[in-house]
Amino acid sequence: IGDYEILAQLKQAARQAKENKCLSPFMERVVNYALKSSKDIKTHTGLSSGTVSVSYAAIEIIRDQISELGSKNILLIGTGKFGSHIGKNLRSYLPNAALHFSNRTDSKAQALAEACDATYLPFEDISRQADSADVIIVSSASETYMVHPEFFTSEKPRLILDLSVPQNVDPEVKKIKGVTLMNVDEISAKLDETINLRKAEIPKAVDILNDNMKDLCDWYRKQAHSPILRAVKSQLYELSEIQPDLEFSEEKIHKTVSSLALQLDHQKNIGCQCITALNSYLHMN
Image 1 (cartoon, rainbow, N blue to C red):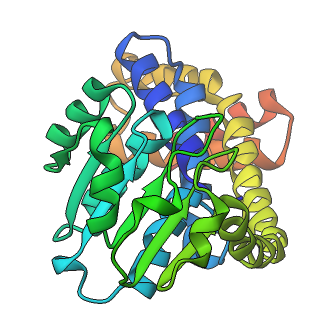
Image 2: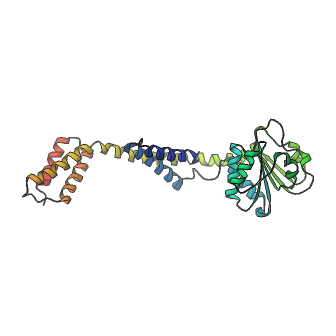
Image 3: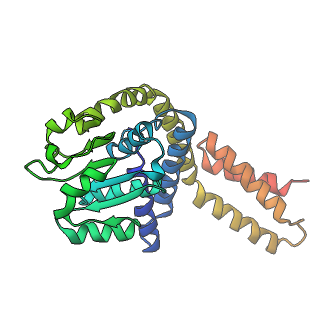
């Protein structure tokens, strides 16, 4: 609820469709109304307030619990799809932190480290490197524990976030003095409150969607009259050519067609409305 990933996908899909001439004018208008609705909801409701992303929640927890981040070492273990997302978030939101990446497939960790201006650590060294880290984030898919109590020989405050399912950090690590260990369930529990707050905003968002849908339907209904309006406009130009004594002007034609558009929007007798428009044009002062 309130996430923008699907919105980004919609923008990308519409852009690609338009580049390949596969986006009709009507569909482009629909997409624009969808984007406008999203912007209105973001501006006028709390539907997107707070964070419900585990990867970004990890960033917020680090900010809350660790001071002087610029002098701290952050070790990320696991650089798969989810781990890569975390690594990029770490660099974006904690630009001054010293980042170190490790993965069972060393080439993946090395590639992400280069992309994020981080240090690559061979996987075989994590037992030694973990002891010097101030923050450890584990995001791997191992069926066994990857971080063990014996990794830590020095006593100092440490924050360990285990975002793996199943857990990849031995729960015994939590008993080490100075260590704060949180698993993905504990982090997710902190997000439940945000979810509930967002749910309370849904009725406001639905009202905004309904208003924009009404505007879209009104626009669509008016498009049904476009061929008639174009035909009348063309006939007025022809009339001005075969009747040179008529005082012709773009302004008169525009005013006549605009008046006809308003009448057609409220009444359905097209023939009578066209005759009325022609009569108005001929007698327009």
